[in-house]
Length: 425
Image 1 (cartoon, rainbow, N blue to C red):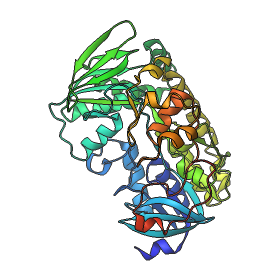
Image 2: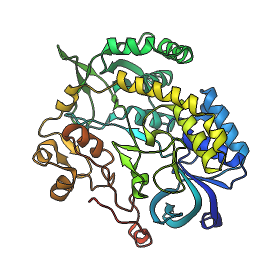
Image 3: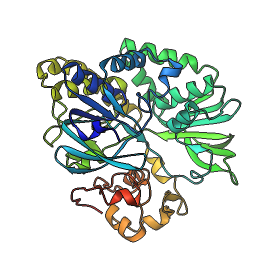
Image 4: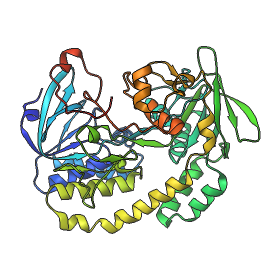
């Protein structure tokens, strides 16, 4: 393990996506010693993955070039798994445990896809929309494969365009939000966003697109063969090799909660300077609320400036951040999930994939804690990251407490990790 991980880091950033890159750039420009932790091998996070090779997004290219010129250290392939107390985190890389000591900490841990259980969703070939895109970027052959893209949110459009460009046959793009709501949202877009939307729509010409419809089941023996779609009035079947399905994004708030930061409603609470309720800990990007790349970049910049003591410059970005937040709120309203999605799972449908716990087995319980104690729901390798948000939508359970280690680690490493107390199971 590099000696740098044992030294005091002025500003430590967790996450090398847009918010983390922006925060690191601003802190480094102030003369701070900055290190960034990410479990991926390169800059960009999930959204800017493979940009160096593909070079399709000018905004990404500008920020990736800027972070390279700062000389900020990227601690690649590293995951934070615990905390030893104020100013020190425990991390694992290549099976080795190390300590990260810092003066200021910026959390830019991003988000993950929201999956909702429905019959057949565990079949091979049913994937998250962003997950399938990431696999294709990593080399999964998709040319000639029939793909249904379904769920909710702008990510579906981007994924469909990307997969089509890589040779996939997009047989249907199904958005659960009603067309009227999407049109109203589109008419409210500022000119810059409208141009982006038009360009994206143009790249999807010829693809069958339907609003107000969603998947109700996936069929196949050992592999996905088809998916059944409904628009509430009728049902029909689409033959496909892959179902790329996602119902929006969920903030990655777990590390913030482990550190004792105020997390409510699935979001990390911050003040105008992006400071959390814990001293010297800041947060930017999706953990504070899903808002897209532009908001993540602004929040990351503000957090980096504030951590470096440049609060005056940070305040100058407040008006831009407010505009980005209004856009995020409009986006949230436009793609709000419909009530019918809570009724997709049958009694036999698996909700917790790690522990094979069904919807029927979970319905008798009244809380996340009770269900975990009685069924082990949320106690598998993903530690509730998949079933937790689904349970919140299905049953209204609050799932905002964590225990160390934050992620699965080897038993030999577990003895070396030290975490704080937790008020939940």
